[in-house]
Every structure is written in C-alpha cells, then in structure tokens.
Length: 151
Image 1: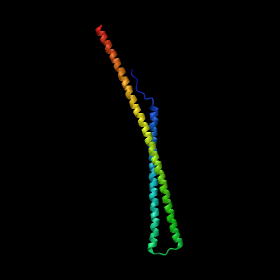
Image 2: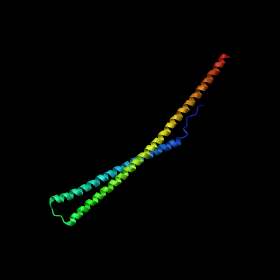
Image 3: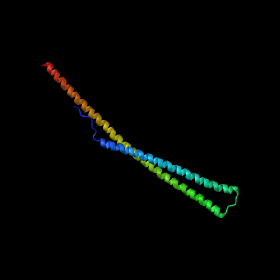
C-alpha cells in the first residue's frame, strides 16, 4: 500500500506562513500610522500658513500693531512652525518604520516561498518513488502471469 506524502517540515512551513501573515498585519498597521502622520504634517503646515497669512493681512490692512501684538503673532508663527517641524520628523520616523516592516514582510515571504518550493519538490520526488514502486509491482504481476502461462 503506497504511503501518503508527508512533508516533515510542515510545522516550519506553517510557522513561516504565520510569520508572513503577521508581517503583513504589521505593515498594514504601520502604513495606517504613517498616513495619519502625513495628515498631521498637512494640518500643521496649514496652521503655519494660516498664521503667516494672518500676520501678512494685519500688515497689509495698515492697522497699527503694538509691540506685544507683534511679539504674540511672531510667537504664534514660531510655535506653529515648530509643530510643523515636529510632525515632519514624526512622519519621517513613521516612514522609516513602514520601510522596515516592508523589508520584514519581504523576508518572511521569501522564507515561505523557499519552504513551499521545497515541499513541491519533495512531493514530486515522493510521487516519482511511488510511481516507480507501482510500476515494479505491475511488472512483477506481469512477470508472474507470463511464467504461469509459459509453464
């Protein structure tokens, strides 16, 4: 009776597949966080632009500004520009994290593919051995029938 194919590295292959799935999930989560960081950069840029426009409008209106008002407006612009810079740094950090996750996913996928190719190759080898054994059995039966007829 021919034995069924059993891939001895199946637990390793299953673990590799699970690692790839986890890497996909981690990449997706990192991409969501990166997109949120990008949105924060845009919001901070808009706030800075708005503060600058506000100061420009006050100057163009020709309304008198006190030193305190001018310092307050400059402080507001500096604060929004600082927040914009901080969000850009955070976005860069998140992009780096996403790239790292993408690399981990690539490694996990490559590892899984190697194990799956090995499984396919071992299955083909098993099928070849089983076919050869079956052919030997058929040949033996045919030889026995030939001997009986000849006798």
